Every structure is written in structure tokens, then in C-alpha cells.
Image 1 (cartoon, one colour):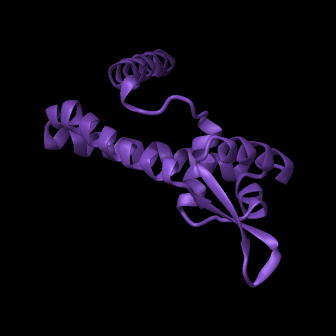
Image 2 (image 1 turned 90 degrees about the vertical axis):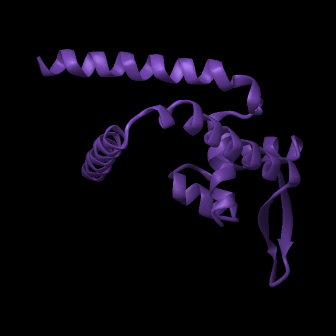
Length: 145
């Protein structure tokens, strides 16, 4: 019985994601991959070195450098020398990345307005609680691996 619920939840979640993506796909820059967005998010959060990004994602600095090269070529990031240590390069978001995050914020607002606003406060509270539980379960299972 539990397996059937999980199967139905996965289908519903997938269908929801597809519908939201279709509805809003033209409102956001689609040239970025998920990994590129993840790196931009980390830089936005203050992780500004290739080594730190690689450590945070548990991947090689070479893999990170390849993604950063593409982001730099597309003018999403800038690389600058650290004035205190000229051998170190500091990563910064470029104007195009700032615009991407501005557009993303507007898109999230629109999704909230069009979709989540139609749920009751009790429904939103239950959804929040369930998502928090899932996040905790996922984090705990990640630690045990």
C-alpha cells in the first residue's frame, strides 16, 4: 500500500513540475544547465574560489573549472586576482548573473501568486511540514552513506 502511494506521489510531483516548467519556461534564461546554476548559487552565497566550490560539491577542481570557463565565456561570472595573494583567483557574479537572479526572484513571486496563493493556510502549513520532514530524512540518509 505504501509503495502505491509513493508511486502516485512521484507521478504527481513530476506532473506538477512539468506543468510549472511549461507555464513559466519563457520567463527565464534557459541556456544554463543545472550544474551551472548551482555554481552561480554558490558564488552568490559567497563561495568565491574554485577549490572551495570543488570541496563543497565533492568534485575535482578540474570539473569545476570546466563549468566556470563556460560561465565566464557566457559572461555570467568574472575572475579577478586576489589583491592579497596574486596566485588566487576570486570569482564574482557578472551583470548577466545578477539579472538572472533578479528574473528568478520575479518568477518565484509569480509562481507563488499563481499557484501557492490558491492553497489555504492549513494546506500550506501541512505542505511545509511534510517538505521539512522529507528534507530531514534525505539529509540523514545522506550522512549514513
